[in-house]
Length: 237
Ligand code: TMP
Image (cartoon, rainbow, N blue to C red; front, side, top):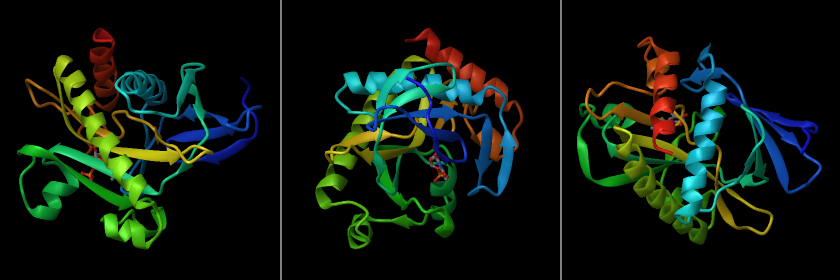
């Protein structure tokens, strides 16, 4: 499958057409941004790691009954995916307090919740991805009630599968962000990526951060953290 015309360039990926109108190629870059693009940088080797990690995790999720956009890994940075129209909701699941949750509610990071939380933000960079609830999403016609139910069901399933998987790697899945899309027939599938850019992953023993927070917070050792988390994953697939 050859790369055709470039359709889109995002902050971390490019998307290309293919000969098949139902399939696209995503190409992962080393570019990193934070705080809605205000902070910019490069994480050497990130594109390769995010591509391979996302593909391995999506294949696991498919086996567990969550449909995804994944079709085939084409190269270190390129993957063939099903074409979707992205539902403009960022879905965030949290198992432990961190990041914006800790900030909004004035609590420390690291509080383990009895049950996971779910929240949505409106995927809209111009507005700074504002938080919204189901009713807001319906009012704005971002998704139907049925789609929102499906998205919630899949998101909690993703959490169950990934939490258990990462635990086996000695890693605690703190929180993560998902995006879903509609196939041409309207079927909802998991899209975008699942990577250290979109998850908080802490070493279960030491609490060391093995994710993009090292870049967001200038903690240093960014590339090493990406390599380490990928090494942990490879040992367990
Ligand atoms: P938050 O605590 O900043 O709201 O982030 C929650 C999770 O979502 C965290 O794992 C990082 C991920 N995330 C993204 O993937 N993209 C984003 O733009 C933001 C703000 C967070």
